[in-house]
Length: 190
Length: 154
Image (cartoon, rainbow over all chains, first blue to last red; front, side):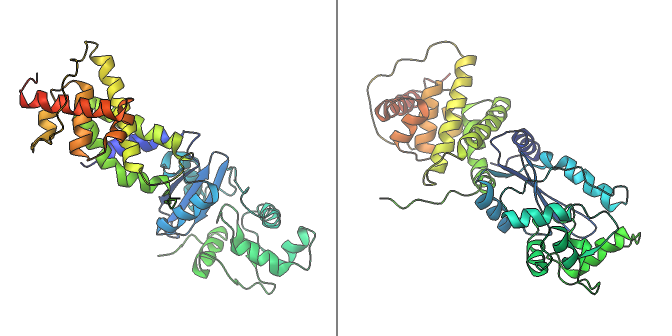
């Protein structure tokens, strides 16, 4: 028996505000392609360029617990803020992040990363220096490469020491697009 | 020791079970009530999901939750007593239009008949769903079948 869209949505909406729901996720369109957004009751725990959510759902379940459901309502605020960011109306995010599953070093790097303002860039070396570990540029690069909350934690603002784009988990074309957006070049992908 | 069967993320469990749960509830309840019960079933399942110990009987488990919710609703709607259960016969009926036929039965018999012959659950599981023993579940199913044969349905 087919479950109607309306009935399905009503359940997912009700589940979104259930404390027992460990992780709510949604897939949303953006100018840099589909984004998977996920949040625990503490905050956003994942933003990834993942067009195929199956594997991501398994990862979320392993990390946070098996109560993972597509429940878009819990992501309303994150989705709205991302829309505003892509349309150029927003330069900083007012979202809680849930980083508790990460190693301490990576949390340290990501917390410092979040302080790099819109439109500015830094290098792995400078970011390493800012957390008091000037020789850890490579480890900082590794921590950024596994950044679980793309865009909101702006690892696209970190460049190689020569200003080159270097790596980006979402692909260099996305890194270029995000930096372009913040330089006022509103022509994004496609 | 039985191998522990992996419990899928709730999303996958929900997608796999939702059609069966709705079909089951529609057999037991009027449509509007069935939709309310559907939502309540999966919310209760969600609240208990983290505590599950293995994934072997997920379908029986969620149908059990659904049945309890349906019976609670029916009890509230239909305060008149349920006909006493009498002799036991365990023959399988050969009815095709189960949903339609079972609609006139008293709630417990209807649930037992639907779970036994519509979903092929064993009586121990049905007993859990009805909050009774497996033997009482078997009697409820038999009584339901007898009533259907006699066309004692309202």
